[in-house]
Length: 226
Image (cartoon, rainbow, N blue to C red; front, side, top):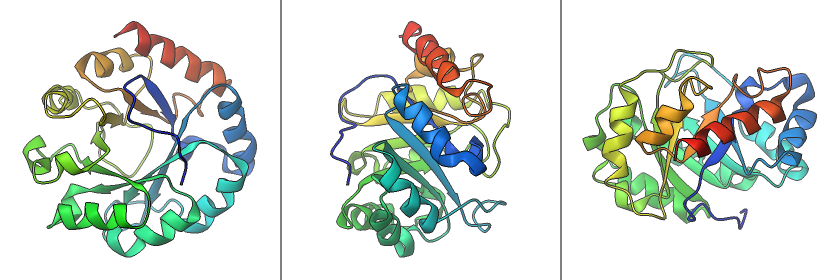
């Protein structure tokens, strides 16, 4: 597991590999890492919980030796307990599961931590913040989806900002508040002002002609919003 810590509060960009050029994945990742990225966001989709299939354990396993980035693995899958250990062994540093698939979220969080990685919990746009109360004190990160998960390039859902504001009052200083979906130049400042400190961006970084420059520009806008 990567020893790098999420506990220190600061703005962090988390480029989403889902929008990278998969024919040049090693080069794409190493370019943003050289430009100062700390986190790589990895969207794992099973075609059941979300209407899309992305990649799984073998891809993460192959990426781990070529990057020292913190692997922030978002499990958009129906059975996070079954697959937690394989993803941990592949090189993930944090596994985020969806509250919507977890009747006993504490059991899921405890299992994820038991396999040696940090743990996050996610809520979809239609899920209220109150759903997280049973587990919120036991996680390292809370992820607010600001689009419906499954596909990149969707429009930002404005009501997500209210969730960020509510969550910020519930989290400790060592817990991160992440947002994913529609983060771009037009939305990043509002997300930071609402309380997000970890910002997932896919097409706004990897979909641009110069991904490192796009990442730096977003980071600058986020810092300015503090």
